[in-house]
Image (cartoon, rainbow, N blue to C red; front, side, top):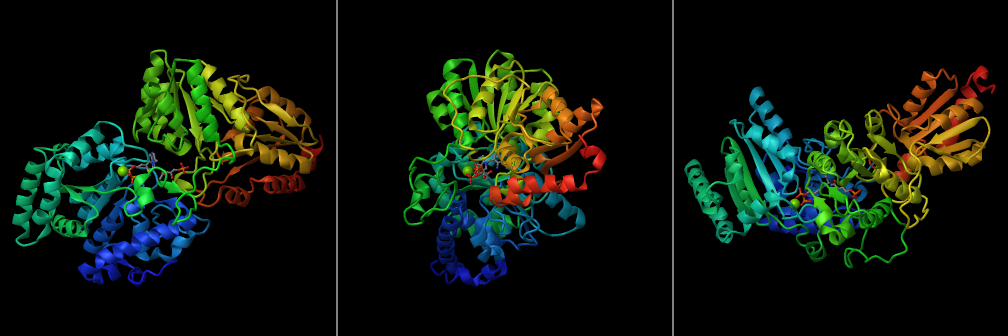
Length: 625
Ligand SMILES: Cc1ncc(C[n+]2csc(CCOP(=O)(O)OP(=O)(O)O)c2C)c(N)n1
Ligand SMILES: CC(=O)[C@@H](O)[C@H](O)COP(=O)(O)O
Ligand SMILES: [Mg+2]
């Protein structure tokens, strides 16, 4: 690591506030350099953090943090904030087991005012904090910092709608870098582009400094500034119509514009909206020219950049889905595909270019994505919603009310099911089997490997009703899918191995670990494939000739597939011992996927251990069969 003499003197924002204004550009330079070095060694979110260096310095310089509240949206741009709030040295374990989290986390620091990872919560949370401050008679300031992508979500507008009618003091900063993970979409993006590309923007960049940049007489100046900016940029922006006082756009990399503007805004009352223009990847040429590639990175060489694909890597489930989507689209013209702003992560880049008119990126709008799919299905199309498990949580009512209740044939390709690793508890997809299994009409499938994933996607597509195929982040056993679009029988599992006494009933990502454990235990191993409809015939058969049934799933053990198996057995009066293995009733921290599974006893050794312990404690009348 290079030395960062000024940055190394900053252990808290109070240290930063002691610096002279003229030292801040040097601090920004060192902070940016430190970010590139440290993220290249740990992996993490890079482009967004490079874009918020100056904004973060300005916020901590102007506001009295932690008494004043900074509320970051999504939180993937919070590394400069972490570094300046006493966690610089923790950056070498960023997102690693027992290291600091990749997102703001209340239990990690008093400066992390709101836990986050999902987008578009900041304005609501900040409004709540601002109301609380008013009710408690506390003079603190509250600032929400939200990106242009996150701003497109319904939740952000629900909060604006609520905040704009009152006089509650709060500042919303729109960090507009004209990017979501992929290029931004939608009408809001067009509005922002008009605001920032108008002829007056360059003038406004200068004017922003002059109008809000010098203090006395502050209120008079600010009032004039407000009117002036409003009139100069646009006669009435969308945000003003919501009841916010709109300022900007200003250059979010210019500390001389940011600091005086924030100082003045800090003293104005009511809901305020500051539009800041930044560049994703700022200051690191490679990330500036490919902010998508550098949005979320693994380890890489800071000098050389991310090595271009060498090929030969294991096929991921995401790629299996992406290939299937293109093949199925070619075979069936009714297929349309929808992503809520996750084109790259969901494996849809090729589909988007080959089937542009059947591809819909709806922005960060999971609820809309699902109901939009329902509408398409009503008219005879076959929508495929590609969505991360954790983000589907946002659209639970839409899944039930708009899709399942009307028995509409929408396919949910649910990626990142189970533990996702470094993103941690905000992003683990560990509840979907529980929340999907209880929905009538919905078929719920868990492929055991990549080849089966493709076949279950085809099965889902052929099914005349709602269906969900849930697969994990990364690769599985490496079983290569065929190029066919063949299907599997609905609600039928398979026996992978016949053994004695114990039957392991495994779902999806844990079938391979169950098979390995089955070898050690000489147990029967079933690949259950379907959480709904469960293969009841298979369960009854296994209950008849084994003394212990063990359900194994990468999902909350409460309400998951194992619970369903127990329910089926109880309903039929089958008295066989059941051990349910799955995720415990607590949130699982960040860490490497395999390591987390091992710690939770969901790898081969853990399964063997749990089964042996259970057999050792099992009463003799239940082990007699
Ligand atoms: C509810 C939800 N949906 C999707 C995501 C995935 N996601 C994380 S960052 C991001 C883009 C956010 O864009 P923006 O707010 O403009 O921030 P930027 O990446 O440009 O810094 C998306 C889609 C998420 N975190 N939460
Ligand atoms: C912040 C966010 O929500 C995304 O950037 C997420 O971290 C992507 O996860 P994957 O790396 O699994 O695509
Ligand atoms: Mg953005």
